[in-house]
Length: 510
Image 1 (cartoon, rainbow, N blue to C red):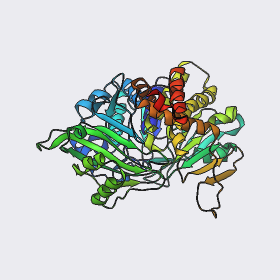
Image 2 (cartoon, rainbow, N blue to C red; image 1 turned 180 degrees about the vertical axis):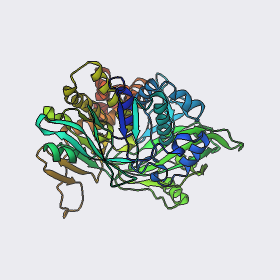
Image 3 (cartoon, rainbow, N blue to C red; image 1 turned 30 degrees about the vertical axis):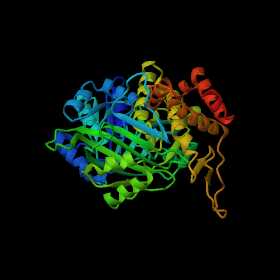
Image 4 (cartoon, rainbow, N blue to C red; image 1 turned 45 degrees about the vertical axis):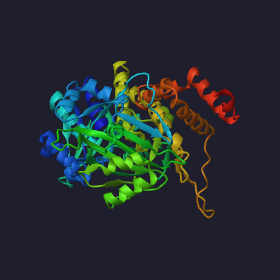
């Protein structure tokens, strides 16, 4: 269920274990525009996107917002689809950016990548092109007998056997003919329908199964757009191809990010030869304007470092300014349900865990879970045990990304927390200066306070340590576990810096 990154990656992996796979997709993703456009036509469509439904992606409302494919995610996709990388680079203008030479990233007031001990690389392409070409590659690599697409079709219900606690299939309705209902039976069903998955509702309805969940709403808002980078007159600024200033609560609630999505040849002597995606964003509901580019520039000039204003002022706008304000963190604790979870049914990607997109974890998280599912099948467990085993392992992947996302989100001054327990009881907490608020104040967990302290000093130390910076970026790229940053050589360096500051010993040691 669902034919975006999680669905396609999972289908490719499972093709090794099943004779036939059906991808049921709500949108018209196999239309001629998406499947047959040239690279220039795809770029034109991308730049003129005013809403995702205009070319068949109405279910992916964030499709036109800025996305990043982190290191481990790109590795998984390029191994699964051997021709994908070369096609994106040679036919669609994708770019591989060096973090030593073309990257500048700031968290709070700390510049991270000054002393990298190895050169790391960022694969730059827009989500719209990547998803479109990935779908073409899937269709080329697997024939209809192996992987079949059913588009314009919405899953409306599960087909279950309550007596043996299993899911047997799904009921669907055609979007082209609402009176047509289809039943699909399968040995294994995967929900890749994303952040608005109906699985929570269906599992409660059929199995009286309540998934404990936790939601954090931190007032994240984006304005995204596409533009051609032009020379600013400052060679240092022009050399920044991937760059940004991360929103970091509670004192830096506004952020900026740019990544190239195309290399182009231009007759304009002022062009840098880059079409880039830009995001100006916030947390704490301190939203940037999207009514005009001039007003957005003034907002950037007032609230962000002047370098980003100069970059944007020298950018030729190629698309509408597209706002997005529905971002949140949501974790479904599927692993807590143990063997109560039904057989032959799992959640992948955003269906299981959604992250505030400012950390860019979503696509790679889904790819890693699909890869983990492949590892479980390779170990040849009986099919009826797969979902239980998968839930435990996939939840570990989600937890890594979850902690990376919510650690700073817990510091947002207007945090809203919604918790549903295993009995279905929901409680809402909200930070507010208003004494008449109907919601109690959320209390930051002790472990989260430790992570906030540790992250703060880790970033401070990383500014002066190439080894620590490099290790931190490997974690951001999901190439290494966050717990690798707790190894003794890093822990004691961070503890030492914190204590030296706390006891005001700097002047005695510097």
